[in-house]
Length: 73
Image (tube, rainbow, N blue to C red; front, side, top):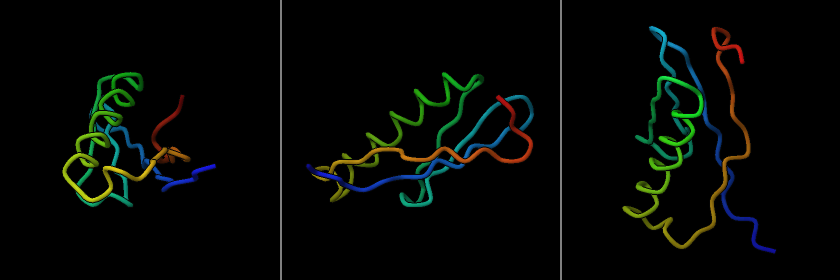
């Protein structure tokens, strides 16, 4: 079984929109009007980050989504 690198997405709510950053991937951010849009954007951002780095061959998965105090689902 290949474990790979586990990522954390820090999710924030600002001005009615969501945004997230991934501390393990410096400069990897995503945003969306809804959580569904955010997660879709986050998936794309992680994929783009992988394609532009040496991580392209390493399995990745988002293990934890950390919501800021202002976000409720």
